[in-house]
Image (tube, rainbow, N blue to C red; front, top):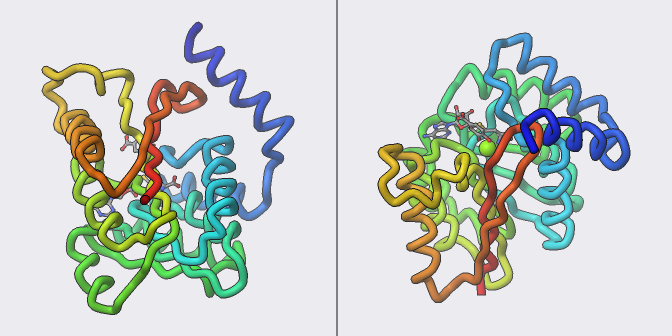
Length: 221
Ligand code: SAH
Ligand code: DHB
Ligand code: MG
């Protein structure tokens, strides 16, 4: 088993189950043109986010890490009339690219981008009384995933879902001696969740076009 096989299987899944979508293709193209890193969720992963949002009947969504708006558009599309998605992005240039794609995708009224490091934009969101959040997608700077999780949990309700991307990190999650700060943060996240009576959670390892990684899904009790 190798990366070539993982990518080929993702391609087959996309061909059969996740047909190309004009606005999403447009968002990817705009991001590529602007030189953004190609680290958005894969189409099969994006579809999973949509299924979770639908199952959840999510009306209020918080996203950490907009990049070019690919996952943002996916999630916004899964919301019912009157739904709201706030997406936090540190990089103003990325946010500008995302804004264009979000508008072109026709979900500009649903999505609100907040530009700046998330830990600096969260307080205003709290003051405005944002929440309770139905679904949180954590996909920004990985060292802060535990902080974002804690914030999301405090602004959730029983039944809310919190999803965190990139927690397995090529399997380094199992390495207590990993010198990588991002990996250490995912280990802390797991220890924190394990000791947190307010959630029941699991982590699923994944392979695919983006390599070997995984995501944590936590259901607020
Ligand atoms: N969710 C996107 C991918 C996000 S990539 C998708 O799947 O389409 C991670 C993003 O987090 C990058 O755009 C990066 O600029 C942003 N980011 C990094 N540090 C951040 C911070 N402190 N606060 C908010 N966003 C941050
Ligand atoms: C990176 C970030 C992501 O959110 C991801 O899914 C893959 C890679 C990165 O920063 O390299
Ligand atoms: Mg990610």
